[in-house]
Image 1 (cartoon, rainbow, N blue to C red):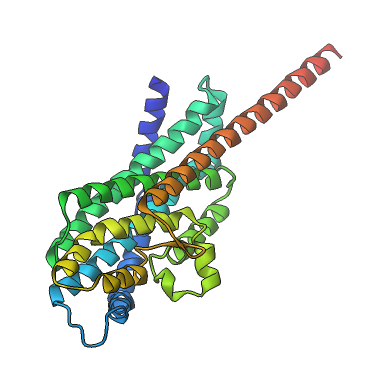
Image 2: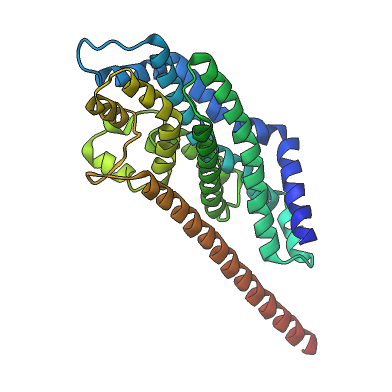
Length: 315
């Protein structure tokens, strides 16, 4: 256990000491902020306005609170996964530098090394995402605060679960990567594409029916929806208290992806949590299995090498 904690501590230190790796993990949030300034704010406002009946006016503070909630949940939903991929690059960098070989020839169990990579990536990503969450909550407070203490707590839980999902997914992917080019390629694809397929950049409702059905199969979609529900619950309650018809509130929820439909059937919050937790369990199990099979393969190769060496010595 001491070795596990020592390796985890080492991985966290290396991540924050490597300025290139650390700042790379912050690229996606910065890109999202630029997108927001340029056109996402208008997309969110237009999506909100399209769900309102003609002639219905909404207080500016309520609109600002709505848009701010969408922005911060988009930023957090994307960051939880993309930052995890960046922090998990240490696994690949150690292969390139030869540090992984040094670990493997030491008495340390290969399962301990793999677990330390996972825990180190999870903790570093949580540090970054929770700092981002704090900054986002300050922004929401400036724009229009409608969150309760319970909503904030659930938002923190959502960040933890989505970060765990991102760490598990990146661990399964990165275990197969061996070169800087492969790592850069995967990082670029994830950074560019994940925000679209999880509903962070554009509302899923704006896509075609076929694409909506495909996106409903992806666990990250439900993580984004959970964040949206908890960040905007106070806004919806304020709308109801101001006399908004329930049909209008539901239409707004549909337009901003708080309501997710699985092939036409509305998915409950409990089911969303079930999908997300289930995906984490499956990915962690896959990571464990891959490392077990890899370790078994290495032991077989080492045994053959020793047998061959003994045979050559006899000859």
